[in-house]
Image 1: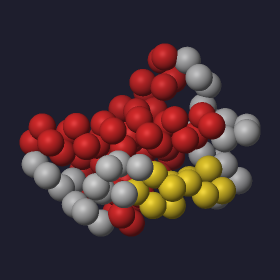
Image 2: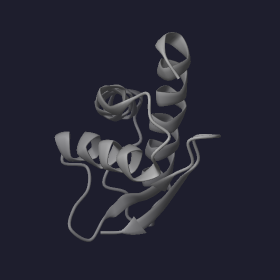
Image 3: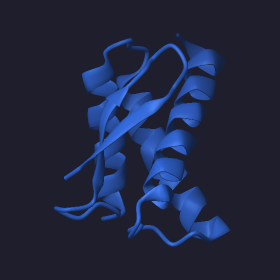
Length: 95
């Protein structure tokens, strides 16, 4: 994955992470367009730093760094456990 393909894949992953955080029973992210876009952007930046990669652990780490940049996750909040590099789906776990 290089160039536009990496950017598109990173955007899909970032949006999936934000959607998963918002589905948490006590989401640490406000569901507003500005908060959502800020979170997607923070995660996207971190993902693009490690891409191209097919390594789920590296992708999950980048997502968690992006969440951490905005202090979205708390110790007990959701964190990304795994990322499927083929379809961009994410598996979350409680921190």
